[in-house]
Length: 193
Image (tube, rainbow, N blue to C red; front, side, top):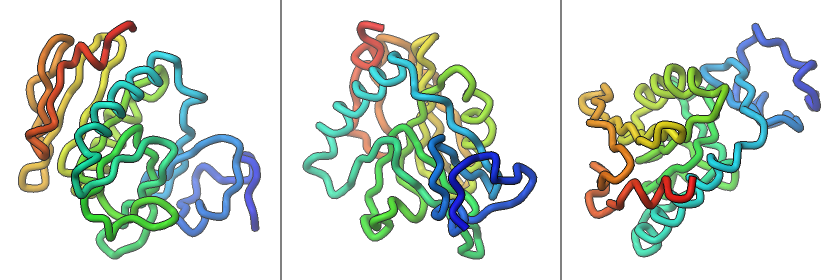
């Protein structure tokens, strides 16, 4: 059955990617371990400006690299240990270097680097749920951007556990651990906000 409204879904039920694929919703949703999470309405202007600034930096760096950069909406399907897909997320920005993970539906498997930009109403989701999902799925590097306070938290996977690095405040030079030549001033990200 094709689902066209969130009212047709049971918030207590566990859904799979096969279910998600059939939905024709106006609202954007993500699946976290089979549970439906509504995405915030259209992102605020500040969110979009930060995403654009980051995308320019990432695009310029990766255009001559064997990796691909994608920004939301872009489905990333994260299989569990049995290969079943109960998690589908739409990161603000992601980098995939294993191009065999890409297909017409998006990415199947953990990206190498994910960036999420906090928005009002999604802080808890990003801080708790996505952090643990990305850690469990093997996302090597995870950036969490705080627009209001103008800083970026970077988490790097080591032995299956995220290690938090010193927050990069406005004016710092942020350098990717996974891609050390990807570095730029955070001022370029938070400019004109």
